[in-house]
Length: 252
Image (cartoon, rainbow, N blue to C red):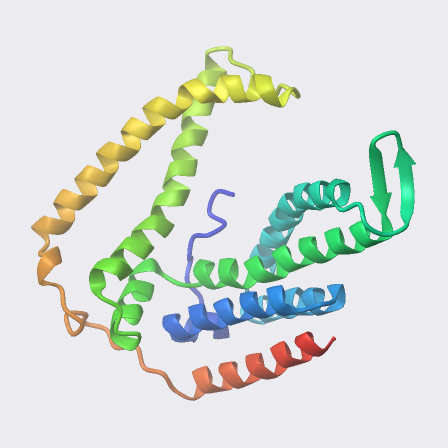
């Protein structure tokens, strides 16, 4: 996951879209994905997202994100498959009962999770955090403190994951084996690492708050940004194409 959500910059169409419009379209795609009633509709949204990413030079990153979501959705699929008991039984072994309705519902939920998450993940990976905050302030009239909190959270999550990976590598160098198959034992090995990681995060948050205050955080206004984020023809075209394709997905 290292670098998966980092914006490396580019000249593709997705990169050139207004950050606020980009995020709003991703949210709309996510809402449409949860509203579809068929597996084909959810897969249609996911496929179009990957195709749009490929046209903007983000095809490999989109496929990596999709693979990550498939792994996460697999757990959801198994849980739903075992919990839904209505319908005709396909497999019945002791207390375990797999039904046709449970299989369809589980596949639908997994497809919806992938289709709803992929557009937002892709939009965030193609948007610089500073541009997103400034665009939300200028275009959406969002107070800067809320835009800053949103972008700081998005930046903080990969930083936290990277620090956790460094701590685990240090423990491996000391002979700790995290590759155990028993999830309870693995949780017992990871639990002692949470406290020092939490303390490190608290120090980073405090340092970031002090740095923001020294830079005049409270004086920041909507017109304080030096860059303008206009909404033009390409944003209107992207909105129109998204509206048509999402409408088709809802009809499938």
